[in-house]
Amino acid sequence: MKTQVCIIGAGPAGLLLGHLLRAEGVDCVVLERRSPDYVLSRIRAGVLENITVSLMERLGLDQRLKAEGLPHDGFNLADGERLIRIDIADLTGGQQVVVYGQTELTRDLMDAREERGLEVIYETEDTALFDVESEAPYVTYTKDGTQHRVDCRFIVGCDGFHGPSREAIPASVGKEYMREYPFGWLGILADVPPCNHELIYANHERGFALASMRSETRSRYYVDVPLTDKVEDWSDERLWDELAIRLGPEAAANITRGPALEKSIAPLRSFVFAPMRHGSLLLCGDSAHIVPPTGAKGLNLAASDVHYAAEALTGFFNRSDNDAITAYSDTALARVWKSERFSWSLTKLMHRFPEDGPFERAMQQAELDYIASSRAAQTSIAENYVGLPV
Ligand code: RFL
Ligand code: PHB
Image (tube, rainbow, N blue to C red; front, side, top):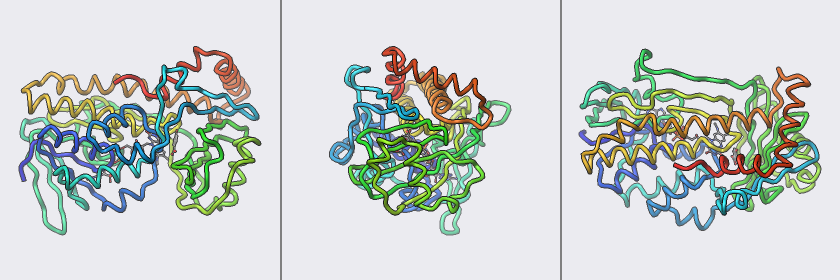
């Protein structure tokens, strides 16, 4: 097969990019290792920044997002008994975030494949990238036992942290920046009303907790747990008890318990790979960087990468303009590093690290006091939370 752009990975980054390219008349194909059902079964992000919403709007695929997404004007940091509300709308001149699950966004993009002429080949195996330094790279994969080859002008790696694209950049060219955290997030999804109409991030002496949601009737909660814990160690009852303690008495009074629809543990890491382009290969989303979920930035960073990559690729094919391709890595990384910083600092502020002593705890308390009393500090958090300009 011959196409202009071969996209590897049909998570949110790959599907968004595929649709944006098709909307501009650029030929592309998306290869995905998993089945559609498997991709939709991964419960991940829940909070969308403006960049992500605006890409769905631009594609005209925002009907369900507009009807079912929950716009939020603020969120809360809890410290023991105190709730510090960050009024993001007031602090950022009316901006909001929208609570809408990654699963639903992915479903909307999947459902529009046929109508928009986006070809996605699911359940591909042994995907391999070749000649990425040339102007005629190609990708091979196996499907149903037969090997296929895709010749193209560009390959875009949207294949997540474990995909093969990043590996196709020689070690002599790429640099990795990595920080692993000494805990993971145990998440529970349940068909019960949320305990609060806005998100609560809590730093309790027993550890971190987050109260989030997917809708008025579906809640998503997290607690941090040691990396040695297994999901089986946490019965639903134990998890609800722990959430009630860590989220504080006011939230606890409003928690409705229910059976878990999904329960999983995700490790936390900060990771950046640079450069995000090598020759004819561009990286977007989790293939190039990971943030701890504390700032709700991962999916939104994938969306901003895709925005830059789509501009660069349509410039190349439709206007013979090479400049944005050349600048892609620097442009994307400038925003990536700022989101990495925010996610790291919110993680440091809201978690109890095993290595921390009384001094580090006092620093957390002082910072939370400062945030509670300073509009400038709250504004800084708010403008990062709604998403820095693209
Ligand atoms: P994905 O979603 O991992 O998709 C990559 C796709 O590539 C496929 N793939 C391959 N395909 C073909 N050949 C191969 N060899 C392949 N290898 C892999 C995979 O099957 C997959 O379908 O990456 P993408 O598109 O870059 O999207 C990134 C986001 O998924 C991720 O950043 C967010 O989910 C992170 N995240 C959050 N982000 C937010 O913006 N807001 C949040 O509230 C938020 N909460 C979260 C999160 C991530 C979490 N976990 C589980 C890590 C909460 C959690 C718990
Ligand atoms: C979620 O709802 O899954 C969620 C919300 C906010 C975060 C992380 C995850 O920071």
